[in-house]
Structures are given as C-alpha cells and as structure tokens.
Amino acid sequence: MPQIDQGKYLYSFAVVADTHLNQNDVECNSPFDVNRRANNRLRYVIEDLNGRDLALVIHLGDIVHPVPSMGELYVDSAKRFFEQFENLRHPFYLIPGNHDVGDKPINWGPAGAVRDDFLEAWTEIFGAHYFHHEHQGIHFIGLNTQLPGSGLAMEAEQAQWLQSTLDGLRGQRIFVSSHYPPYLLHANESEHYDNLGPEGRDWLLSSLSEYRVEGLFCGHVHQYWFHRYEHTQCHLLPSTAFTRQDYSEMFRVDSGDEFGRNDEQKLGYMLIHLFEDGHGVEMVRTDGREIEANQKPYEFFSIDKSPAFCNFGAS
Image 1 (cartoon, rainbow, N blue to C red):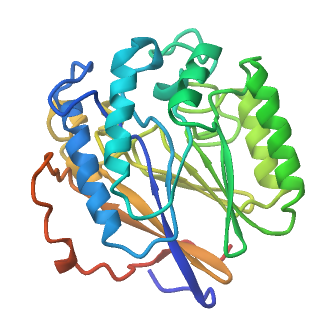
Image 2 (image 1 turned 60 degrees about the vertical axis):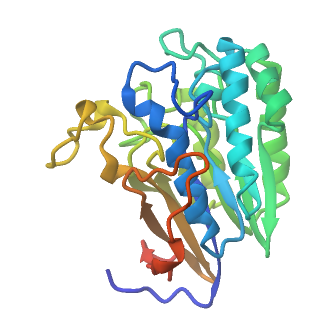
Image 3 (image 1 turned 180 degrees about the horizontal axis):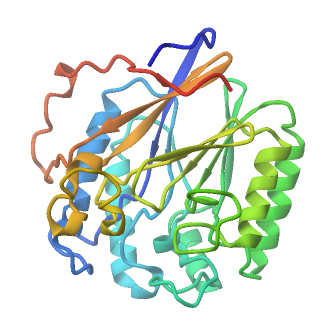
C-alpha cells in the first residue's frame, strides 16, 4: 500500500486484547485445550513489547478467563496477569471485558450479566473502570462498555464522566478504547453477542461523531475487522490467546485445529504509529508463540522491529 504523507512521526503505542489468562499455566476452566496456552502466549507478547519503543500499552479487556463469580479462580488469574505485566517496561492502561465484570445486560450471555459485585471485584483487583490519559497532546480514553443499559449506578457515573471529559477535549486528537465493538457490519444492525445493544451503541457512536474521535479500538471478537464511522477509524483486534471458532470460516484458508479456536496465524496485537496529521497501524502476528515460566526468552532483538506502517488514510 502506498505511503500517505501524514507529516512528522510522533510516537507509537500498542493495543492488546483478550489475553484470557488462567489461574496457572496448566489448568483452565475452558473445555478447549488451547485456552491452557494463554499464559505462555502472553509471556511472548510481553517480551515482544519490551523490545519496542512505545509510549504506552492499552489492554482492551477480557484480561482473565474465569469470570468474577468463580471466586478464587478469578483472583488467581488476576494475580498471574500482574505477575506478567510487572515485567512490561512501558506504562499500561486497562479496561474491563465481559469476562472481567460480566456480559453486557443480556440474559443469554455465558458470563452472566454485569452486576455490582462483579464491578466491585474489578475495582478491588484492577482499579478504575475507565480512564483518560494524555501524552504529548494526544488523548486516550478507555471505557467500560459492559455498563450501558445495565441501570447500575456506575453506568450514569461513567456517562457523566465521559461527557465532561470530552467537552474539555473538543477539537483535540482523541482515541477511544472499548471492549465491545459498537457493531460489526453496519451501525443499524440487530443486537447480537458481538456488538453493543441499541442504548450503548447510540451512546458510543454519538460521542465518536460529536467529538470527531480519530480512532476506536475494540476487542471481544478475536478477529481483525476494520471500518470507518464518519471521521473515526474503527479497529477490532485479534486475541493474543485464541481465535473464536464461530468466525473460523471467514477466510478461504484451513481453520486450524480445535475447529478454528487455535488458528495461530490470526493471533497477535496492534501497533499504532502517530503522525502530525493522522496515524497508521501495524498488525503484529505472534503465530501462537509461547514462553514458559522460567524459560529463557527468544532473542527478540534479532528481529527487525522498524515500523512497517500500514496507513488507512489521513484522519
């Protein structure tokens, strides 16, 4: 793809999604064998990130695989996350996914709908549910998108916070992070497991539109999708741990073992390269590589880590 002149290069950051960590490296509450690999696969990602020059790292949620109702499994999995991320040499920011605080408010989701005690579990272990961070004049906002439509007190608190925050940033460059994508194909599609319901979708899309958000990053689907919503470039990220087998037949390639759930070539994370007049993205495919605990890491610095920009156009 031809390079588009977007002015001077500023800096890069990384976005990681759906790590689905387990309580230890050999056990998992999932019936799929590939889920046991999540911890070792994140170790590889941490080492790969540490070999890069980054301003920050954002995690889009589904940090752990056990849901809050599983008690000690949830707590122990969270401990494994912090054990790994304490080795990350970059500042990092987190938002919760549905495995972390419960599904969006539906009665047909596998994780159980979001509720106050699930939110409290996240607060006690991980801290804030949403964030605003500024770096060199560019603003990063993270949201808890399990909340919209729940009627919980935190839903109104977050909405008020977002409105106030965005009002103070009007006309500036903004990137938003969300676990759930607002939609997959078109903005008026019916609600399903992999998008926001009408209330949450309208809330998020109206904010993107009014404040001319430059980029939106979402997880949950475990596959890469790209589309535009008005001014906003929307990126749905792959997982570092496993693919969703319900999307395994999207491409004309063999879906891999476990009916596509271990389609290693689709695993990875994203680098975003910021310029004066826009941004480019670079997908880092990890191919399911793993590092076991106490194993000597790969020699990452033998790999060419110069940015391979993939520009989707000026913002």
